[in-house]
Length: 610
Ligand code: ADP
Ligand code: MG
Image 1: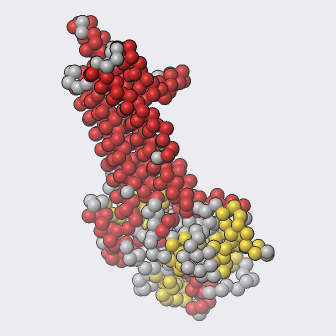
Image 2 (image 1 turned 135 degrees about the vertical axis):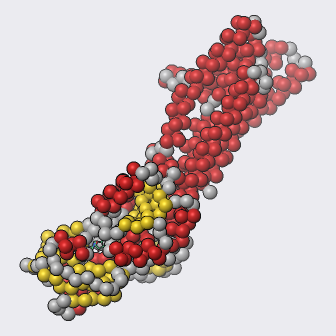
């Protein structure tokens, strides 16, 4: 409010003088000239900025803006002797502008509140104790200390201590997570219980909190079609209205000779025609919706992504890491020639460089690998597995497709689970059965989407049997198994060609092509995954599939509000324009309608943040 003090004073002062002027005219106080001066004073106080801006804009070549409309209308009214009306037009326009500024400031502040997730300083641990330093100046590899109650300023790995973290500012997930030595921690999370020391792994500008902020701040650059429509609309609309006003002022005047009646109506026309309600409220709606979503750990990269999400009728899920937890555990080892531990060792060594959830589980199951392994020439084949050179031997670790492609005679397994086959120099060594669990929220997410009339599909590179089992368990509409990443793109393209408005939800591991191809790519569990953040249009920081439902709800609500504002503003305007042309309203009501629509539309926009 303080920022707007000057404007408020001007409005009040002008209003008081206006009322005094009106009373004076009614009572017949003073003579005509003095009353004119009173009105002129009120007019200048209320309208000086608007007049100035419209002259400046005309000099810049932007003629038809709202300042111009208001200036012409009010000056015209003044000239034809409607002094009080002229002041009222300017005054009320000022009220509308003030209201608009307050609303825009407010939603900007709510975005700025997000910056609190990124502290500017860090407590650097040095040989001489701890020093406070600008977070920007901390280097990768430095150790920082974070006390309970503080926000973690930089991403890193816990080097000392244990604590629980409130990740809600980043992920929207309210349950605290425990963390101890060796765990990755992300900037923006609040340290709740113990002192922890963190070895920094990312520079300040690359930290999770910085990325969240960048994304939200840049989201207004990517406009929704609706927003672009408004810009185009007001570009043609305003000149048309000015021409109509001219026609309305001139032609009937010449015919009826009632000049002041028709000029007055034309001026009213100009007042009502101001498109500010649209120009202000529609972008504000998207801004508010995106800001509100960010607070729930849902990052939407722009109005265009939001609009696409709102129009979705098909949600396609990747399986591993999206509908399932992606933390596999080894359930059986079936070697052909060597013992179980040795087979696991070969698999773990071959997967040494891979980050795929399957690799992680194999490495975890084996434990520490010997130091002197010579692992080279690693080829990770997406959707199949890995081919690695260990010493002089070529090792293949992956599914039946990989084996078949390399002519290995492999054996099938009766176990339910993901089967990882191992072959050394083309000879089959056996397989390992690993199993993944379905996320507890997957089933309810799918059923909520189905209830909302959406088609749900699962795509996976895993075996037919495993896919069928998962699909049954979560009752998804349709599934496709044994897919390579390019097969996923093909299936998606078919859906798009059949009129599907497709959202693809994946974890970003080897599914960037589909994320990019879908109408909206949604990366889930993106905390810490750069690839997913890059490729996706919408980023869900935590890995709960129910968030997809929330994201769709927010998008739908926001688009609906934007549309309401458009229909409502244009509807009322057209109605009042007709009344003005027919002489069924006066400048007071015209002005009231104009600002009233603005205020209501802006109030409506702000709802999108809730
Ligand atoms: P999803 O489509 O379910 O996300 P992926 O495309 O990541 O699965 O993988 C598909 C299949 O490819 C896996 O089920 C597995 O059989 C095989 N695979 C992929 N990467 C690896 C790997 N690093 N090691 C072993 N097998 C792998
Ligand atoms: Mg995957």
